[in-house]
Amino acid sequence: MSVRDIGEIVNRAKEEKERQEHKALFVQAYELFSKGKKPLEVAIILNLGQAQVTAYYADYLKLVQLDDITQIYRELGTGIWDLVKLYKEAKTAKMGTSQVFNLLKIANNHLPSVEHRHEQLQTHNNQLESILRTKSKELQNLNSQITVS
Image 1: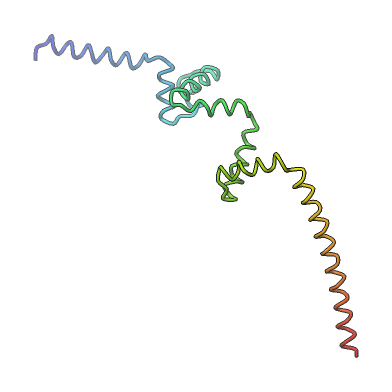
Image 2 (image 1 turned 60 degrees about the vertical axis):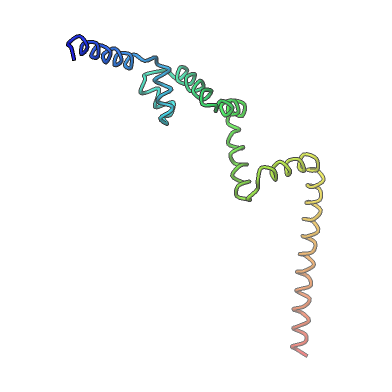
C-alpha cells in the first residue's frame, strides 16, 4: 500500500470521527432514547434544557410510532392514573377489553336504574338480616322454654 493510500484512509477515519463527535444534538438524543435512556438522563448527558429534550423526545416517539401515547398523556394529564387504575382493576377481575366496553355501555345507559335497584336490594337485605336476628332470638327463647319444661 502506498503512503498516499494510507493517508486517505487515515483522513477518512479522522473525518468520520469528527462527524461522530459533532453529530447533531437531536441525533445524539434519538440514539440515547433508543438505548432506553429517560429524558432526564438525556438532558444531563447532552446538557440540554427541559423544553429541548421534551421536543426531541416527542419527535423520537413519532419516529417510532408511539406518538399516540404522548397525545393521550397530554389529553389526560394527571387523569392518566385513573386510566391506569381502571386497567389494573379490569386485569384483576380478568376482564377483557370487550367486557370493559360492554360494562361501560351498560353503565352509561342504565346506571341510574342499576343504582336504584342496588339500593332497593340493600334495603331488602337489611330487612331480612333484621328478621333473621329476631327469629334467632325467638328460637333461643323457645329452646330455653323447652329445656325448662
